[in-house]
Image (cartoon, rainbow, N blue to C red):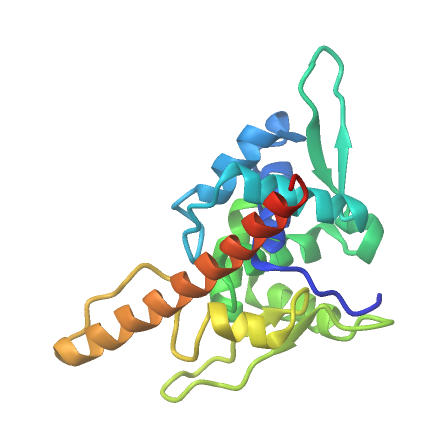
Length: 223
């Protein structure tokens, strides 16, 4: 597969669509309103993104143009719905898609974290199964979909990140030291807590700037 350069909103949309398909298939494909709510959801998301409907519509248009997403009409419904096309575009198995889903929704993670979190989407094959899945995603032909990041100081496990957007964008959303977890109180004093909060603010500022650019592009289409 050729190099992919999706933005933060597009990545979040794809993650939400995979999640809905695997976790609650009765509610898949998804309407625009359901997608917006899924993108804004606060649990199982990092960072939390309070995006506007217009930003989601703009991102969906781009994803449809590149055939990452289809718009369909289901029987008995007058509202268009959306489904992802990742299996056809990438050839990924269901297990590989579950790993990509969690990386899309929560950013870089360790195999242990992925093993725990993919369990809500698909039957777990344990840590060894996750490591084998990550290996397949990194060794895919014609190109990898996942990469292993450098180990952070003080951590025993490497983290893995998807390659559906440029690494500099991933680093902006998840700066070194950021974790895909709710804020943890530190016993090391107030300075460490402030540092964690500052990093979270940086992440949110990067997401906000991306949303501003998306909305600006949307407005220009009607000017």
